[in-house]
Amino acid sequence: MADGTPALARIDRAALERIIHRAAELQTSEREIGESLTSDEVMALGRDVGIPGRYLQQALLEERTRLISTAPAGLWEKVAGAAQVTAQRVVRGEPAAVERRLLRWVEQHELLCVQRQQPGRITWEPVSGLQSAIRRSTAALGAGKRPFMLSRADTVAATILALEPGWTQVVLTASARKARGGYMGGGAAFATAGVAGSAVLIVLGAFVPVALLPLPVALGLGYGLTRRYGPLLARIQLGLERALDELEQGSTKPEHQLPPPTTGFLNLLASEVKKALG
Image 1 (cartoon, one colour):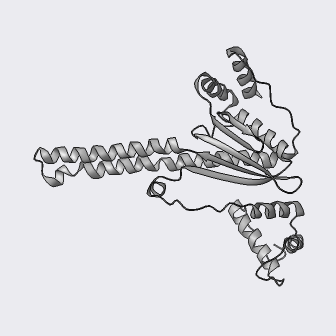
Image 2 (cartoon, rainbow, N blue to C red):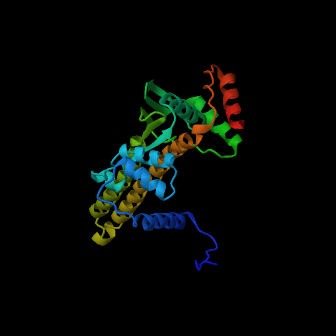
Image 3 (cartoon, one colour):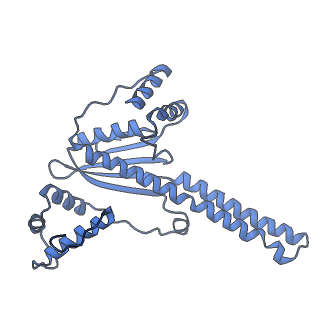
């Protein structure tokens, strides 16, 4: 290149983040910065490095309301994973408008129905029975563009809080205790079967090394089954982040009211087919 900077064919996202972070670090190092800054100083510093004010304001609000995550404390949490996951975001819009967008998104793209709704607080539970079967079948008409991410969650809860005018904090929490219990129960069943098998072989007079062979195999299978809960939990976490992405990116989209509730099999089927085609 003319300025002597080596040319790169393509820059992936990870490299881009490192470049931007390092460039900002170099520019801010030219200024005298103490151990802490006020909000106004952070805004001024961001303007100096060319960051738009609306992004700085959103980042500041997210930092002020950031939840401190703790590492799994119990044995089962360390082996299998946490029983619930949380995601949060500060988005543009008033709480009522954000709540409507969230309700619409969940109603259209997840197998959940409202369990309870209060001002600033919503909980969902999985759709079951005929309605679940219809929604799963009609989802195929959408060519899999919006896969269901939260269908294995026991409940999903949203807390919507007003911050500064025009900004709202949304905290989503999903519980997966039943799914974790199922994986842990399967792992425990394998382990129990291994112990029982070894005990039977010992009673029958088998050599101890031979009698103990079922035990490590069963323990390994049980542990492997328990570890399969991790990808499920990660998928639920991704589902929460996807909903927050929609709230963040859809803040400028025109709003429309939720469709009226339908009754009867034909109305339900027509509603689901219409959503899938739309």
